[in-house]
Image (tube, rainbow, N blue to C red; front, side, top):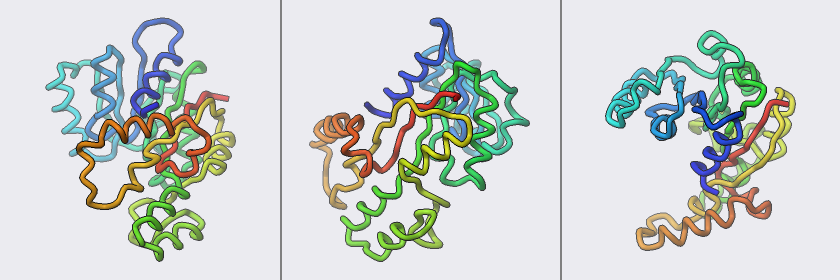
Length: 234
């Protein structure tokens, strides 16, 4: 299952009826998912620290004719309590956020507080094991070793991410902050292992089929570049 398909499953699951959902996209940037969901009839609030990204979001929403359904708010995961009312959100998208915040536990606690009891969390995190394998496959052994042994799963001081996770770590983090995991999918299982410079324009369909095959298989989770976790309030 692709990330987009997984999000759509969660949108359906979080509603008591067939009406529109209130979706909160944390770090949603220029609105790739937000605008798509708005075109499907949902109300979307995007919280992002970048005013430039939010301006681009506004333009994209206007071009798609969904400006009324997309609300942009400048802020971040750790200040949600000041930006979004408690228990008002059906689905939270938290993609690529826990890797960069000061404290992932604080961010998840804030997410938990804004969700309705029937809500869902779509959590996407970068995985340490896959990053090690990808760097080894490209001959970057020094970075791979740093990733493997660094407590936070970083390749060095110039790594743009503050941390990476493995499945056990993210499950423990979620359970300690009020969430249960319903499903885990692997995202980008093979894409980051392709040889650099490979012209895969004619192989796109084949790669997509392989990714779809691997995304729901436990055997491939440890080598997926990202983990998509479907979560519910515990």
